[in-house]
Image 1 (cartoon, rainbow, N blue to C red):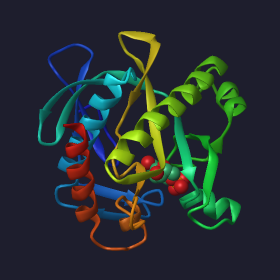
Image 2: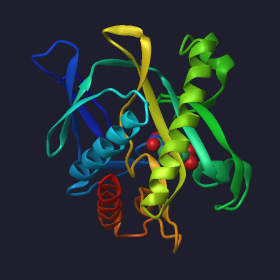
Image 3: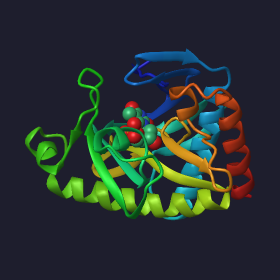
Length: 235
Ligand code: TMP
């Protein structure tokens, strides 16, 4: 094992620069103040991430995906994860509402892109391009690329999730520099209901980790429904 995070573990494989990414059943919220284990979460998030990565690749978005492996594991290219988390918001929710004092559900005319510093100790504080440059997290050119890619990913995912009858409210993505060629930055980590807010287009029902964060119950039922719809829309 190379690394253990809150929701995934990374292992080396026999192939150089190819890692095994295992999706765990553990869930955390509010910087791990709240913790739980959800049976099948790993399996569901792996399956959803795989289908989304395959869909994004078809649309020309490079990811670190190599191949599916088994129920809870993907094979991925080894990357050096940028310590900048990229958040895209189409609708106000979560920390945006807390920070700005607005009601959940305000629709943005144009998406908002945010950067935060990937640091559990500091609680992933909001940063900007200048912070990233001065702290050596990403160059100005890399920041511009991250923002541009995040907006492309947003458009592609928004359209795809709409086909699933889901509104893409917001999401967090991470990028990595390929170990075999650090000049190439690709989408890495995961795209799942842990990292996206997804609301049913008709009823507005929350189908993502907010069910856990807000104690709404039926957490895995929401994830299962997301997987079912993502599978159908991928056919
Ligand atoms: P936020 O509104 O809490 O800042 O979250 C924005 C989006 O980022 C939301 O879809 C959930 C996701 N997210 C993560 O994936 N990891 C995190 O640690 C946090 C705080 C949010």
